[in-house]
Length: 108
Image (cartoon, rainbow, N blue to C red; front, side, top):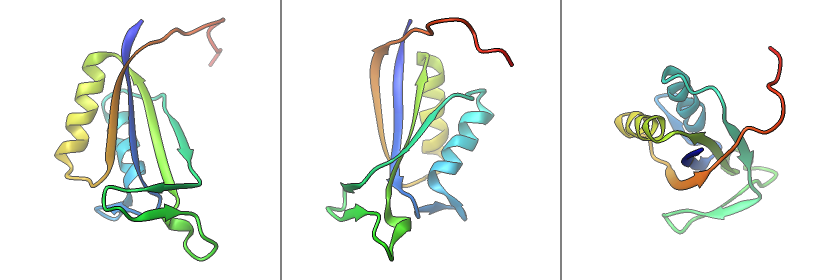
């Protein structure tokens, strides 16, 4: 199938309306019927503000974090529009991809 990988990135401690930014992105995704995602943390990053972000012993909430979705084109655009509408400060990447679900479906 053809679609998009959409990834949102921000420091773990960044909040939007009192909620961690990437938690809010996941809430918006669920509101659009998007249930599958992958959430990752990184060792370090350098942001748009040229500031170095990492998980220090005393600053764990500055750890770089990412939530990634694999979506069809309509859902990718809808999610990006929803996040944009929230005026959340974060970084977003949208890449065209081919993807497959391999093997048997997982029983519920």
